[in-house]
Amino acid sequence: MFSIIPRDMRFFDLFEEAGGILVRAAEAYVSVTTDYPHRADHIAVIRRLERDGDDVAHRTLNRLDTTFITPFDREDIYSLMRLMDDVVDEIDAAAKRLTLYQIAGPTSWLAKQTEVLLQACQCVGSAVGQLRSLKKPDGLRARLAELHSLENAGDEINHAATAELYSTSTNAIDVLKWKEIYDLTERAIDRCEDIANTIEAIILKNA
Image (cartoon, rainbow, N blue to C red; front, side, top):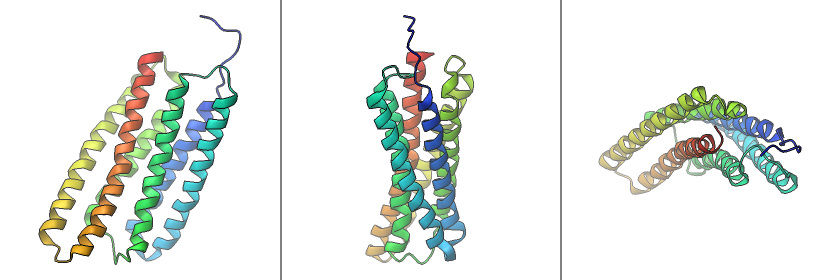
């Protein structure tokens, strides 16, 4: 039904702002693994971005409370923003443990994980930027398919990293530390796929 009340398009700006934060957090996490002597600086960047992400999420929820007509279902807006915030939270949690657990240096597996995570976050950033054009979703669907492939790649890396950890480590405490770091990083990748699933639902409802 045609409505004389315009939809609040400011939500798209908020999605893009959150997507940019997500990408920058993933870039900083990659920098942790490639520039480990300066990890404290990169982790501090992630901490700031985590707070920025919380701020965007709060502004989005406040806008939901005061907006009569939204671009698409309120629950989808809430889910999309919450999941993007979750990705940054997982990155922050994983990166902090590198210093909390006094990790001497990153493994090659963690470097591979962070690269896949960055690609997934870049796909999310691109995808949320295309939500304004739901009537022409072909490009958006390509980004979502890429996200599913990256999640599968992330799973394979996590499984291989865990297998090597269990088969080669002689220190049970080190195993527990690294298993948690790997799993937190993998969860960030998983949340990116959850974002893809949410966007797919939005497309089905609105395309």
